[in-house]
Image (cartoon, rainbow, N blue to C red; front, side):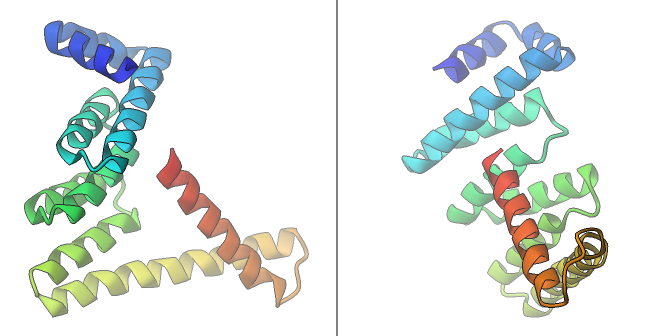
Length: 169
């Protein structure tokens, strides 16, 4: 309901979007309302409405990758390859190290049946994941004084929890 109110306000008085972007509290409140509304619409398979809310969230806070990731999930469901590629490019501009970019591009090329390009991007994501996992094992394992059996288990759980948190936020 609050997302609809924000959307109406931004549509009727576009200057409010600029004001919202400049105030952290309003920005978070509006962004969160749009994300929650988009998630609800997506759960109800009302994809066009979900896209509208997630796009509005990207306008409110264009630096937060979460809404782009939500959009990529919907565009994947709808087989909108051009939109998937646009989101991958946007995510790359926000954070060139974000492995979702490689995963999205892998998916994009997979759906276009360009197997070599698809494999290249999936391998890049996989290699980065392995490097991140090794870094966590080496740093946290030493700090927590974990044995060699505990290190990979803890590293995997930390990465999994972080990924769940990123999808939920």
